[in-house]
Image 1: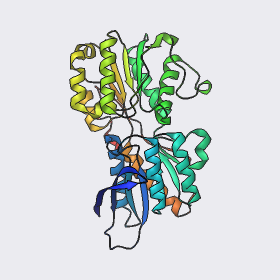
Image 2: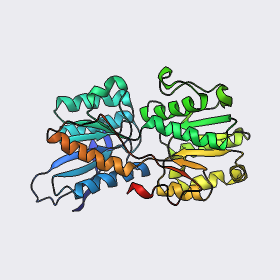
Image 3: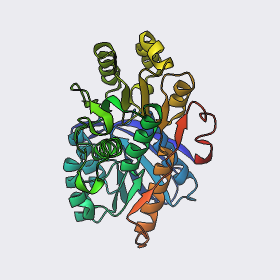
Image 4: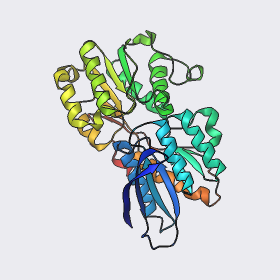
Length: 342
């Protein structure tokens, strides 16, 4: 088995990038499962695609993996991709919602067509959980908790912090912000809703007025935002992105941080960032961040396909939430922290 199609397709007016892995075209008809990322060119989602392809390759021809999504992170475009997949009669949908409000309509359309719909990486809003069978991914709140614990290890007395997030309406990033704020501020999780209560001095932590920042998964923008903050706030204690944004453009990230490398080396300012892809761990080892709290996107793509196959066979999931590993990487354990993820 191998990659048999890589092309551009039009999906309801939105340009969608598609890749398919499955059996040769003359084989018997297979089930077709779609893994729909927020955007196709993010290294994180490319890792999930590889997990999806692995599951298809090991399925003995039971199903093929269609990896399709918009070229940019945009909820409306992603919805159009989903609607196109439904019209083409796919047998299952696994979606990382770019905008939880918008993608709920896609889940409703899938249900109306009798197509199993699950989420991965990011979820729908709690009031819409009944529209999807399962969530596969990291506990996003716990990503935030672990980011905050690393921050506390470097800055035990508190300080100033800038949170950089993804999309304003991205439920997964809002949950991570909530975990950061609850842990640093000592808030009761039950009393706050994502993205949580802004830090205004609790436990010594204060969010600077320029933040939070929202990248909308635009990596070049994330680097510009970071440069502006480092330049404009020279006494910043912590910069904490809830995704790998800047590090997904490694050369540009290194260039942007070079003028501030002394601040990083002295830990005057620390960067604690989400995700642990190989290109990120290289930068961690070089001192461009101080800790990375990761996920396993490969696991998400692989497990999502296994869940969809079970659903098509009439097997109801034993769990509503299937959580994948959460590695915590520092400069001390960077060589081994993701060794067990497969």
